[in-house]
Amino acid sequence: MTPISPSSRRRPRIFAARRTLRTVSLTLALPVALALAGCDANLMDVFKSKETVGGSDGTQAAGRNPDKGAAPASTFTQFNDIPIPAGSDLDLEQSLVLGTEEGWIGRLSLTVKYDMTDMYSFYEREMPKFSWEQLTTVRAKISTMTYRRGARVATITLQPNSGIAGIGSGTAIDFTVAPANRTVLDSGTVRR
Image (cartoon, rainbow, N blue to C red):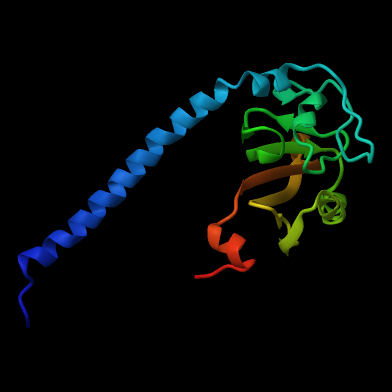
């Protein structure tokens, strides 16, 4: 059996220290980024607007006065690069958006009165109209759809929205948009 040299014993500690430093850095960077995003007056004005929205193709949400914790339908005017079902309510507590117009990234948490089958068909039909290319789909009790457009990737998660006493009342939609991995952009395929 060969003895372990002192230098080989230190190596795991160095890697552990680097991981810890990276975790701490990311933990500190997130609140700073959120604080800076909150300084964007245009983004905050969007959530205060009371105007109604009427998309020419019917995919934008129609104006209405949603429940507490939800944003007015005019909030969706900022998101002109994705289809949003009419009558959607945005859950502000579960949503986080950074950037504006076609450069935004983040998560939109929506609820709609339509069933999940209709929403799956809606996004499968409407996303290509907004120049999103379908990458993958999983149709199940909780369905996931992934699309790519330029330098961004969108993941749509659909699940039944439990109403009062567990009786279904529509669909909960999580719409996440993030920058694409550089290797995906370069080749159009994922490299490992």
